[in-house]
Each structure stands twice: as structure tokens, then as C-alpha cells.
Length: 142
Length: 125
Image 1: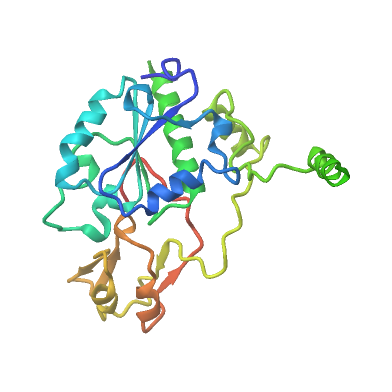
Image 2: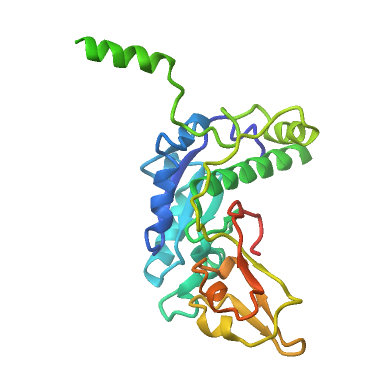
């Protein structure tokens, strides 16, 4: 994957895999005029088939495991997966719950972890910058 | 009518409410831009000022810690791991919920809330 493959605005699809809605609110807050992530050309889209980036919130509940895999497969390559919030990276307060299919990285491969509970909109923007640099560096190696 | 014209005129010269956090627009090359920032040729915009009493990343002072395990008892997310040999704890940032109960309960103030919140990474911490 190189930046040439993604040489356009990053379109984002938001997957809630059993989150408490804190991270979802922060994602929406980063779209508001105060933070305005759309000035980077980013946009929330309604279907994974239009998306370049998957924003996954929440630990993956057993109900959502198959659906999350399906959403991941529906997203066209090249794609970036970002985990928003601590639930997705380790399980957070839901650790050791009988109803979890493990944190997100046990279900789909993850590129960037955004730490916070919930992370502030700036932390999400910083995560996007990290994803962007990762793509560019991968492109340079090729 | 006049009121509206006044408002319109004001809006023409007002700055946008948006806080242009890292940069105003996406640069052509992010790596190049970050390099420029390191060299001091470009500047990053500051994030929105955080409110007072903000609970960010928790700083742990290993020297001060007496190994009383109170933080482990009080933590809702099991973010602390007890190190049997050293009689100290280990703090896992990516498990933390930033409730800062451990900060309140720590008898020697080895745990302190910082204002750090830009914590994204490629790996779990």
C-alpha cells in the first residue's frame, strides 16, 4: 500500500462493535465546526464499500464478531483500520467479560491505536496523522 | 434589516471558530511536513485548551511507591499489575479508563494525573 493508492481524501466508515458511545460521540465531535476534520477531506460515509479507513470503537462483543469481519472484508483495499478508545485495544473496563470475542486486534488487523477513554477529538486527529505517515513511509519503501 | 447587514459584515471579518489543530489543511507530504516542524521551519497549531481538573495520562513514580496495592483494589479496569519481586506496580496505559481513583487513593502521591492526552500509537502501550 502506498500513498499513491490513497491519493485522494480519506473517507471514513465508523463501526461500533459494542462501544459505550463515548468514543462515538468524540468521533462525531471531531466532525463539528470546532475541530472540523473535513478540512482534511475526511468524511463519514454510510457504507464500508465507499471507505478507506475503518474507525472501530468498542471491544468486540460476540454478536459483533462476524459483522466486524464482514465489514472489514467489504472495505476495498487499500484500507487502514484505526481503533478508537481503550476498549478496542485491550478490552478496557470490559476485560475478562464472558461476552467478548477479544479486543479488535484478535478479530481484524489493526494499524493505529488511539488511546483514551474516550480520546479527545485532537487525539483522534493525531491518530489519523500517524496513519497517514505510516502509509507514506510504506510507499517510500517500495 | 440593518441588524442582519451588521451581522453579515461582522462575519466577513471574523475568524472561523475552527481550531486548526495540527495544520490548516492536509499537507502534500505529511512526513515532509513533520520533518519541517522538527527543523523549526513550520509550526503546529496548539490543540483546544483543556479544562481545569482534566484527567489525562497517569504518571507513576516508582521511587515513591510503597507497594500498598490500594490502586489495584480501586481500579475498575485492572490497569495495574503487581510486581511480586519488587513490591511495586506496573501501569498499563491502554487498559486505563482515566477515572483517577488511584490518584485519590494513593497514600504517598506516587500516582499523579497529567494533562497529556495525545496518546495514539501503532502498538498497544
